[in-house]
Image (cartoon, rainbow, N blue to C red; front, side, top):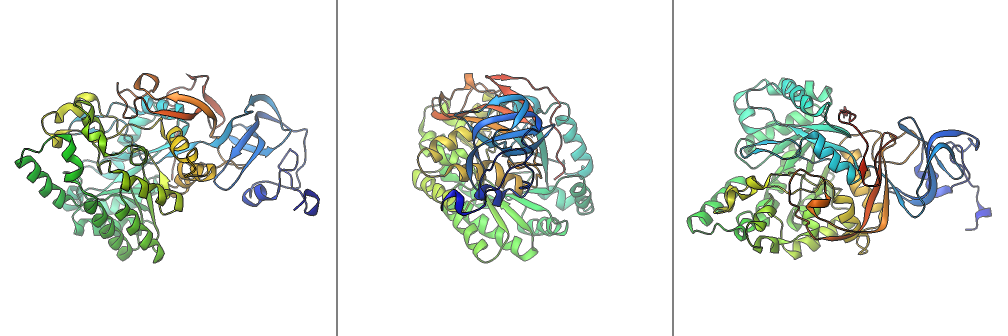
Length: 491
């Protein structure tokens, strides 16, 4: 169709930008053609990538909000984005900063972790509240916010964790769930694994009922804990305690079965559910089947399942122990199946499950893998890894990349104004150089841990500038934000 065969529409304050963009840009006013308007800041000439389209355009910012998208926009300040991709700020809905575990605290607090996130193009995170069994949920929320407020440099939200011991011993939790929901905890973390967290089926049912009652979202770690415990005891008794036995102690079927069970109970209760860190085809197939039957259910996977494989557990000590996580990193067949699920829409978001244990916590399992603190550090590397191994290999379009890392997480985790480049949205924007070569290394990353599971991995494409609510906080390899500028997001 020629340009003259249909009317052209205009972005506020700019020149015509075309029908396809405006179909998805409900905030654009086609009658506003005031090209002389001057904005606080204009990002000029970049390739704007959203979850539905891409085009070359200027993006104008007033205060903390995106004001216009068009061409020929005028700003008191200008950022030249020629040759760069202009993305919505990435949203990481699954991170563990300053997490208290049996091994001690994770290494990144809310300052260090959110600085690392910003260098990676992340402008919003969702972390967790882990109440003690006897602790009221509103008190736990206030305590956790006290750790983050004054430290976070980007905006953050919190999931509220409901544990088996809490449900078994303190009935008041059910009356407190609506209180924390109104206070901004839209999502509730449930575990079918781990001592101190494990929800047997009766407790899982009660937790899902409570989530449904407050119109929340259940985010679930799904593995069959009793079976895993049985298998693990057998390996230890046989002296099979090297890291290579870790994935065998938690085989894919123990994840797939647990996902099916969680989905069944969620369907029974009417709860909306997101399955965290899916690592195998059996789990993603169960999710796809549930959705085909009309269930409101979502799936998340992580970069380490898409980029790494189980040969990492064959590396020499101490390196192999750094790759222990739950569910485990699996073989190449499972990795390829996950890529198909991600590309085909069976999985909805990619988060990092960033859990930066100090090396001494990792090396606690030097003589027995079951004593190792599980977790992968990746809050800074997600956009670059998915661009290199997904977009550049033709497995993902650039719009699908943005949908998985930015737009869908904001929508599913309940973060209004995030994850989109539209007038009225928060001016959380990343300038991404798609040709920049980077060799990942702990020395070049910003987590507090002195190692990286992606050490030596070569990526092409990297964030170069990060704006949070209109403020440039990363540019030219330097952080210019301040502790505490990040806000708690009521979701």
